[in-house]
Length: 99
Image (tube, rainbow, N blue to C red; front, side):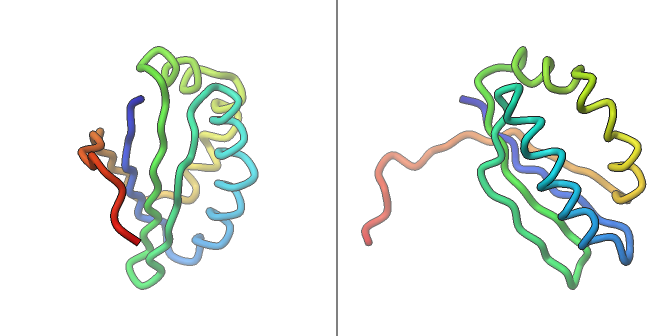
């Protein structure tokens, strides 16, 4: 399983519409192609949107990224986002934290 942490700077005044778009379009469309959103957070003070997604392989990610459904909403993404960054990360937790 591959994991990415993604951080976006959302344009001023666009956070609420971005969150709506993300939940209505990105989450279900990516899941349809095997790219699963694990968590998402907003840091409103910094106009930041941070989220984590997982997928089985680079091929899985490529199928999603080349899908017509994703292409249909890329313009909306650009309307909302000033900057995007992502990091590929690896899980190193060997045992669950004690409760």
